[in-house]
Image 1: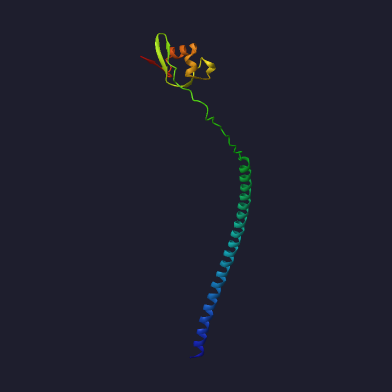
Image 2: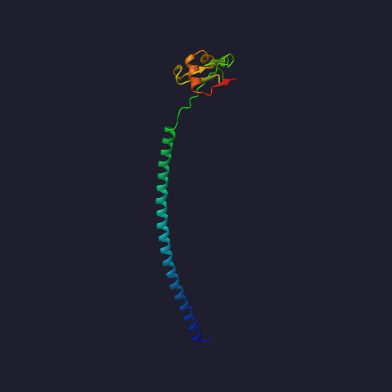
Length: 147
């Protein structure tokens, strides 16, 4: 191998080295730009994360206030039923009005024009002429005609 051959090889290697150095410099520039972009994105992400943490804290406070405001005392009302109270009966409540016989189908009911609209039993209505008149004249469903 001659000196010229070695020089040519050296020149070729130097050319490749220069090309590689240029490519490396370009890659380093691109890498620095990418790193700068990554840092910008990290900063933006951190800011958004801080905003979300603040918003979550505000929501937690609002939820706590709402929960406190919506607490309604749960009172239990006990209704005592008197087991000894007798239920109204229909026995002995048949009546005659206007020459016809009737019987009650319901033991307790209301008549708007009688007893101030308060409940009245069939036994009470059977002895109250005003109640009987209203029931028969208005053909109320609480009574029925017997033969």
